[in-house]
Amino acid sequence: MIYIQLFLSFLQIGLFSFGGGYAAMPLIQNQVVDIYHWLSLAEFTDLVTISQMTPGPIAINSATFVGMKIAGMPGAIVATLGCILPSCILVTILAYIYIKYRHLKTIQDILKVLRPAVISLIAVAGLSIITTAFFKGNAISFDMLKIQMVIIFGICLYLLLKKKANPICVMLLAGILNMVYGILF
Image (cartoon, rainbow, N blue to C red; front, side, top):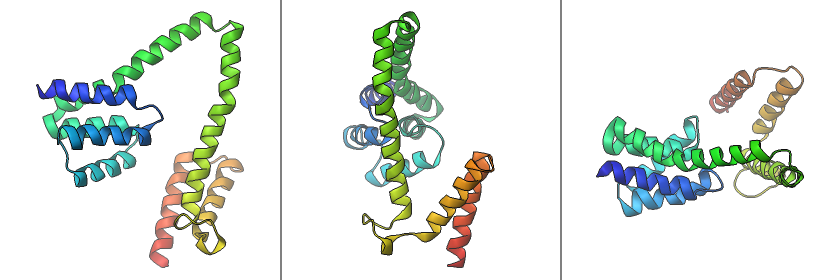
C-alpha cells in the first residue's frame, strides 16, 4: 500500500510540476507534509537543502529522499519512477512527433518563436542568481554589494572565457576562494 501511495504522490508531482524544481516545491510539500505526513515541516526544509546540494532535479532528489525514508530502497525506486514517468512519456511523444514532422514549416516556425522565449527565461534566471549572489537582501545598491562575490565572479568569468578552464575546476576554485574569504574576513 505504501508503495502505491509513494508512486501516485510523486506521479502527481511529476505530472503537474511545470516550471522546474522551485515550482514543484509546493506540490511536494502538499503531498509529503500536508496530506501523508511523511515528513515534518522541519524535515521538509532539510529535504529542500539536501535536494539543492545534490546533483539532479529537485523533484527527483526529493522523491528519492522521501521514498528512502518511508520505505527504504524499494520506496526510493518507486517514488522516483513515479516522478519521472510523466516526463518520460511526454518527451517520448514529443520526440516522435518532432522526428516525424521536423521538416514541416509549421514546426520550424514554432521552434523559431520558442527560441527567444527560452533564451529570455534563462537570462532572467541568470540575472536573478547574479543579483542574489552580488547583493545582500533584496536591495540593489552599492552599499549592499558583496564585493568579494563580484571579484570571484570576475575571476571565474576570465578563467572560463579567456583561459578555457575546466568548469568543474572553476567551480571548485570559486568555492575555495569564498571559504578563504570567509576565514580571513
